[in-house]
Image (cartoon, rainbow, N blue to C red; front, side):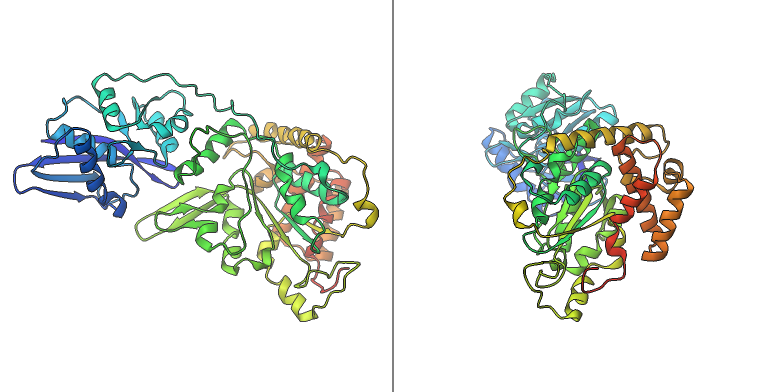
Length: 513
């Protein structure tokens, strides 16, 4: 007898349908699984057989053949355990046969029959809704994750027997599916704690308002990391659409916390400089997303940039430019979203004291040039704001006057982002939310310049030798500065400030100008 059970697999952040076909025939007892299963899928035999026995069922002493269709796509993960167990029970006649079309089953079985959480349930729910399916049966640990999608039935089972009880009398319980209920996390450090560095605070406000990439250069102790870690406190909360897309990345990686639904806080990822290329960009045994995707719709901060592996740094170019990263393997290619702000920090020289007024730099000129060259021209070209941070003097360190809190800055950022969202909502094409992601056509439409602005940019291009990409980024930053001011047009002062943030585009010198 043959049984057909629906499930799905994950490629990137998208789910695609898989049918678990189980055939039980007379002959010598045996178990054969085909359809390009990986090691974890092949091991399902031992888990499923033990779960069936410990749940009071009998493993048929016959020839069992399992096909994971379509057979030309590699199958990964442990989510096929539950549909495989149900398929064996149906095919062996231990469970009453009934139509299961329109249902998807996902779950990893433990040896005692309990159903453990699996990755990618959110993507599976989105797929089921898009195809008009009846619903999903998922592990109880994935209940909150699956219930984020409205308009699709969901049953969360704690063990195999509970899943079978649902099949005998199907009926989906109602779930609270308002993804906006969890408030924004307010535990971030606050800008009011930062003394001095007013220019850097202003630049980070501009970066947050337009989702621009930024570079912080300064001596040790000047506040580079201090400022960067407080950036999330001025970012606006994720919109419902952004929150759902960001959560999908964590779902397919199996990083959803138990009992946690969805957060309105933008992600802030700060990997150590020893991180590998695969961990940063994505890849590995099952093409796992990397840090650049975990920072989607948030911030990827690389502290001490010259200490990172050169191949990892250079691999950031395509994700920064396109907002996606494609991981290719022999059997498949998967694409993950990676539209995030890139923040990097570095010292001005190997010893770190080149810009320090109180400590003497001991580096030779060739060492400084070689150190700065670790940040390649093509990557520097993709960074919108270059900030050189001076050291604080004693009067700033002991100043007890209150500084502007993050809440005040965040409100200005939210107003600027609202202006951008309303502006781009009228455009056709892919939906974007921030100035940093404008296309060439949108630049021509929304960044018109008067003659004074053109003269300023011409002077900057001729003096600094700017590329066409740097020119476009000046326009985007100028547009953001105008939005912070509430100006419908880009003025000369907006362009002048944007050009000021391209200080490292000048010909590199071992000593500050």
